[in-house]
Image (tube, rainbow over all chains, first blue to last red):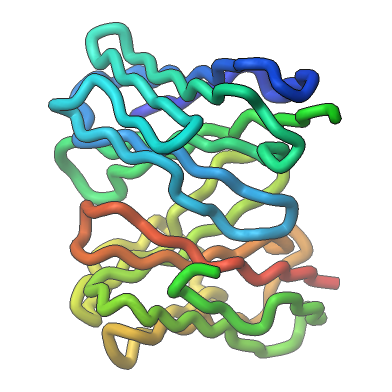
Amino acid sequence: KQEVTQIPAALSVPEGENLVLNCSFTDSAIYNLQWFRQDPGKGLTSLLLIQSSQREQTSGRLNASLDKSSGRSTLYIAASQPGDSATYLCAVRLQTGANNLFFGTGTRLTVIP
Amino acid sequence: ETGVTQTPRHLVMGMTNKKSLKCEQHLGHNAMYWYKQSAKKPLELMFVYNFKEQTENNSVPSRFSPECPNSSHLFLHLHTLQPEDSALYLCASSQHRDDEQYFGPGTRLTVT
């Protein structure tokens, strides 16, 4: 079974700082990896999706990287803003099998003005 | 706001009640999903529907009963729930089974 781990569980940074969120997974036979943002009591908003053949994806101030061999992905947020405060989740989809999407428990980010 | 809507947004029900959660997607997708999100636990996939057919049931208790009348609508019928069923229930859709998923805002369910 795929295990997805996100460390740290919570992170506080001052506004303007660059930061990195980490996601690790145990089964490297993945189909894709997706980063989501979740605001308190709300649903998930997709940020970036990386296919297994890709090494990174960028969207604005966000950059996600994927290293399948080491079972790791990082989400880099540049010049953080208070509006970036949210919980960030990563989800890994395996190449085969039913019920093949596995989520981490998330990193709760607080950007302090 | 996403193209996936859920109603109600909040629901409080007793253990003997029967209620239903509704999800609607306006994205023309073919696959729809129900997830349960409990505090400090990863999202748990409950059910998957692909072209209106249930393709996955992740060992969900029978007190949760899904219904998918068409590709745009998904229901979760609830009856005789337990307090531990209190959670945020999220609906999602995707173009096809393994494509990028788009989530609704969720229904916060409290079972008393």
